Image 1 (spheres, rainbow, N blue to C red):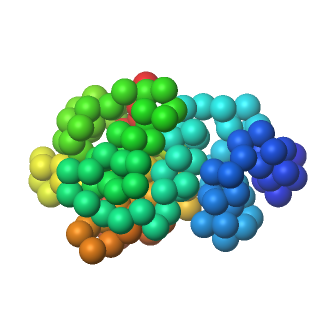
Image 2: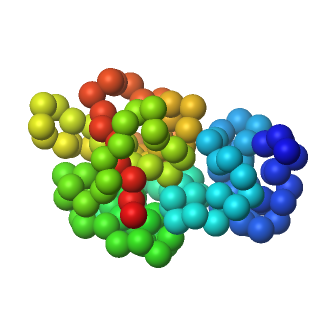
Length: 157
């Protein structure tokens, strides 16, 4: 079954968040990287849908939602809605995840931006080299291409 054939069943089952995700990624796939309808029910996929549904929410340092977010506040909020607990900061979240390679990354995994051994930013991998994140003061939650190779990946278990 192709990704396009799955769109109607995913949208019926997952609702508005999938529609927002569909619009945000150009209308071809509900969530890039989802391999089957069964995958739509995973916590990672749910967290990705929640993050996408927050598109346009303003950045605020220290905010954990539901209307404003900083980077780790968005990942914390999204995974909490999916039934998973994460610590508060990007560095703490990195230490809590199962570290994976770039080749192993899947939609819904966390992407950690680092300088040396210092983790300074986090987003949720959306597939196709893009993340949902809350970038910085004056910006909003959005889908953006990963802009550096200085990233590590983590899977929430």
